[in-house]
Image (tube, rainbow, N blue to C red; front, side):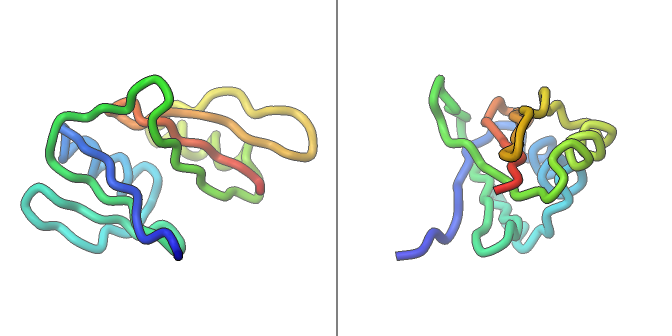
Amino acid sequence: MKAARVILFTNQMEKMTVFYRDVLGLKQVTAEPGWREFKAGSITIALHSGPPSPGRKGPKIAFLAKDVAAERARLNTLGAKFGTVSDGEFQLCNGKDPDGNWLQLSNR
């Protein structure tokens, strides 16, 4: 079995579209009413109209970045809000999309 997509529910379709397409730079592959998909490597991230519910331990979408600090800086200049990069060989930093879903930049 292989993962096909991560589906996030949102009441902010346009704002979330701008974030995933323009800020994170993912290629938008569908634009149907109430449904948008973005290519993210071997899976897609889909936005579905409806109330968001990221919850306390909701899904976290992790994006691979060879240089986590550089990618964090680039994305934050585009309007993302990623936090501090961890020290050491394994680097990561966390952020959130406009609906509060957790995102992570990671070098593994």
